[in-house]
Amino acid sequence: MTSRYTVTVRLDWEGHVAQPGEVRDDLPAESVPWLLAIGAIVPAGRRRRAKGEGVSSGEAK
Amino acid sequence: MAKRSSADVGFLLVGQYSLLGQATRLEHRLQALTADTTTLGQSWIEHTYVGLRRAELDQDGWFDDATASSHEALVALPSAPRVVSYAPAGNAVGLPCVIAAGLVQVNYTRVVERGGVHKAAASYVASGQVAEGPILLPLGALPSGDGAGEVVDSGGATSGGLLVAAHVTTLSLGGHSALILAVQHSADGVTWADLAVISVTAPSGQSVQAPGLVQRYLRGRWEWTGSGDSPTATAMVAVART
Image: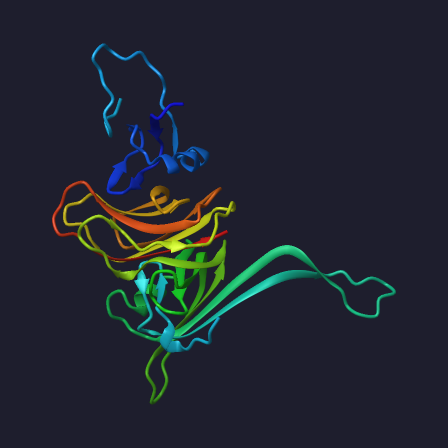
């Protein structure tokens, strides 16, 4: 199951802020189900990752 | 429930005007419209609800021609509906606020009499929804940094949407491009999602209707967009589940 989500509305949690359009992999796990249910996040589209490219918290992918 | 008195009233906001200091009386009437459906053979009148409700608000108070006071607020009889909010039980997070999202002012009465203080009165009819719900950001000065208010626990989620009223009575952006007033909801009190966002660039009273699911926890937040220095604002945000 993916843990990368595109944010559709501004989100705030524990000192973090995500703006619409950002792709995040650090959302609180317990919040993901209801955020998906209301459409506040959607699973990030898959794409081939370039060699050596990593995923870091808060970085737009 | 508790009995309340005039001393408990937290604010009266008409658009961008704060009129608590000039008001002496509010009369707020809600009416369910019915039709007489009595037929032959009935010995008592019968009425049937026709699915419409009506709200009216009368406001009495003192005439005051100071800037941003009662005369300036009421004399123009603006053709556009206004957002009117009042807090019958105080000005704090979670206390109730009556929100009239679209009130059309239908008259302005100025009373001048011998031996008396001049008075001013106005009446409104509702063109839209009137609802009651908690204050999220009490009327007061906002800090110059971004932030969020205290959390209101509504006890559960609802599915009928949310009416949001935001009043800004004073605003100095200090170079910022706008003041954002937003309502956020949360199912767990951990992560907060914007539900309604209002952008303000001048003193005003605004309302928005956010449709759909509204989670259990609510809070207001404010944000100064762009760059600037020492912005100031006096604002209030309240909501009502619909």
